[in-house]
Structure formats: C-alpha cells, structure tokens
Amino acid sequence: MKRGQHSKFEQYYEGGNNVAHNCFDLQARMKVGNAPRSIEEIKAFWLVGNSQPKQCDPLFSWLEKQGYMDDELIWQRIDLAMAKRDIKLAKYLAGKLSTQQVHWFALLNSVHHDPQKILTDPDLKQDHPLARKVIAYGARRWARKDVSAATNAWQQVTSKYQFTDEQRIQTQADIALTASLRHHFLAAELMNQLPADIENVEVQQWRARAAMRTNDWPAVLRSIVLMDVDSKQALEWKYWRARALEEMGIHADAKHTYQKIAQERDYYGFLAADRVQQPYVMNDDPLQFTNFEIGRLLEYPPLICARELLEAGQTWHAHNEWKYLTVEFDKKKLQIAAYIAHQWDWYHTAIFTVARAKHHDDLQLRFPQPYDNIFNKNAKKFSLTPEYVYGVMRQESAMNSSAKSHAGARGLMQLMPATAPYNETRKYVRRVMAYATVYEWKMAQKIMRLQSRMPPVLAK
Image (cartoon, rainbow, N blue to C red; front, top):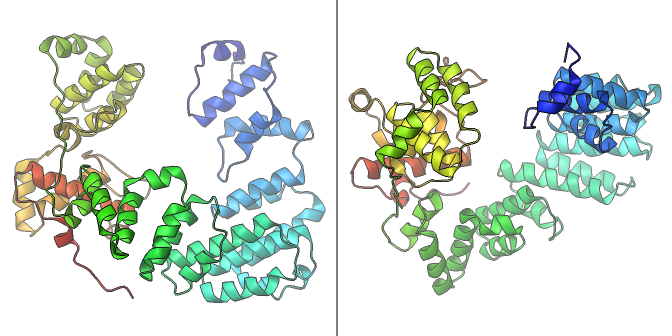
C-alpha cells in the first residue's frame, strides 16, 4: 500500500485467509470511504493471543484515535496472550494500559513466575476485579507445577472473593484439565465437580478419559452422553461408548456399534474390528480417468509452467504455481491434477491435492511408497519395521523430502538434527498406527492387528 493505490487494491482483492492482506483490505475500504461494517470488524484483528502483522497497526491506531482502545479491550488481549504464554506480547500490551492499571499487570507478571503469591501478596488481599483476575490466573498457572497445591489454594480463595461464575468454571476446568493431562490421582474427582452441561469440548472429552483411567465405565458412558453432537459422532467416541457398554455387560449393543465402526479405514475402525474379530476394511477406490481427460489438463499452460519449475529444481516456485493454478479447479480437475502430480513423483503435492478434492480412498495417491529399493535395504539393515517407517514418513512430511519444520526438524521423517526420537502425542501415535496398517496391506504382507501391536499395560 506504499503507493496509496487503495482503490485498485479494493477493486481486485478477492479475500482469503492472509491476515496481512485482510488488514490491507480493511484499510483500503476505509481510505476510499467505505467505513468498517462495525467496530467489531477491527476488534477481530485485535483480539488474538499472538502478534499480528505490521499491516494491521494502522487499524489499531485508528481504534486508539477514535477512543475505542480502552483498558478493558487491552486487558482482553493481554488475557489471550497470557493464555498462549506469549509474555513478550503481554508486556508490550501492558504499556498501553492507563497508569493505575499498570500495577495490576506487574502483579499478574509476578504471579506468572511465582503462582504461590496469590496467597501471600498483600495487594491481592482486596476483593478487586483485577485481583480476582490475577488470582484465577495464578491458580491455573500453579496447577501446571503442582495440581494438589493449586487445588487447595483455589478452595481457600473461592469463598473470599466475588469471582464470576465464568471465572470459577474456567479456573476449575483448567485445573481439572491439567490434572487429567498429568494423569493426576485427583483428575476424575476434579472433572466430576464441574457442571455436567459444561460446553468446553476439551473438558467433555478429558472427563471421559479421566474416568477410563479409573475403570469407571458408567462415568465414561455418562461423559460421552454429555458431549457435544460433533464429538459423539466421531469414531473415537463411538468406539469408547461401545467399550463402556461392553465393560458394563451390554454386549449386544456394543457388538452392533463395533461392527459399524469396523467398516472404516481408521485407527478406531481397526480397534473395533479387533473387538469383533473382523478383517480390516481398506475401502480402496482408485480414481480412473481417460487419456483425453489427463492430456487436456497437461496442455494447460500454468501446469506446464509448474512442471518446468519442478524439473529445474525450483520446488518452492513450482508449489506456488500449483496453488495458483488449482485454486479454482472443481473436484474432478483437482482429482486429475493429483493423479498427474503423483505421476511426476511429486507425492506430497498429490496427497494434499486429492485431499482438497475430497477423495480419501485412492490409497495409491494417498499412501505412496517412494524410494522403495533404498528404503527396504536400509530398513532391513537397521532392523526397522517397514510399515512403521512409512507410517511415520506419511504422517510427518507427507513424503516431502525437503520438508522442514519451524523447530528445525528435517526430511521425510522430520528428525531433529541433534536428537532425532519425536513427541508422541495421542493423535500422532494413532495416525502412525493406522498408516502403518495401510502400508502393511499395500505391501501385501500379513497384517498385524492393532491388539497385537499394542498389548495391554497396567495403568499406574
């Protein structure tokens, strides 16, 4: 916008998810006389817990000049930044607070580093709205270090201050979530103390998991019943509902649900198949096109340009060209484009393109096996299970050999230069397990069932 061509920008900009461009768009509309549809439209760029692009700064300056940037709005963003542990941003924002409010942020920052101060700091003895904010934050922060101590501290202060219902529930929910994530012995108890109709999806799901750890299957079932509609329809919670029914002796209903879930090519589909001793279902549905359909798309000039860039080793430019040329493709064209990318050995692009086309059952496109000879030789040399390594590669890089994460992880398996093992999150492990099973099927090997891959372990 350096040239001030706001009218042209407004004329040609078609929208999107780029924050900088969207801030430019709003600036352009204001410059050419189109006021924002509401102040809330600008506030939406402000109320985030991370730093925004510099292109949004003129909008924030406008809020200040118009008198909308009050302490309450600044505190809302400070809260969001603290929730994301972006202390640097929170400190920057605190500089915009009025003089009498800066002291409260200093207390908040002090409690961030030493949460026990919520019980000892003399400035927090008064029942002030900002004192409640600091104390509630401190209790949540304390739970990350010591769940039991934080729980006791919160019980001490709740009767002494006029916390809002929202503050009470949010703080109790955060402490209960932390306890559940740490497998703390208080987790199930803390979860059960929360309102049955709490709308926090994460709490709903972890309440069920906490009950699982104590083998309280009726509580698991109740927790699933209380979940939001989308969660209850997910295969994960359909499976655990069936497990709860099975453990409670309601075998017919459990078996019926298992049989339905077992028709899905999914981690929980495979687990369900194990429960009823059914074969795994892969649902492979290869896409098929005529030579005419493929040839016609190959003659498309932007596609030719992408191919030339790819062959010249200009992968980044080829990728941008691909994104541009496929942005308006319909479902059929996206499917053909994915097939073409796979033929070019541009596997990760094929994977993402066929996903955009909403076709998830062409297992040749979605689960390629590049570098087969080298891979099999080295897998055997280092006693690695081939399907597992392929599963990790598919999950981590989608078969992009030049992939690099913000943390510095590199290559097909996204290994860190110094340490190379990975953060085994639940979702990560489930996907690798499922992908490994698909690759085992693709390699025409005898499929090892998940119940064999994951023998039962005693909960501690």
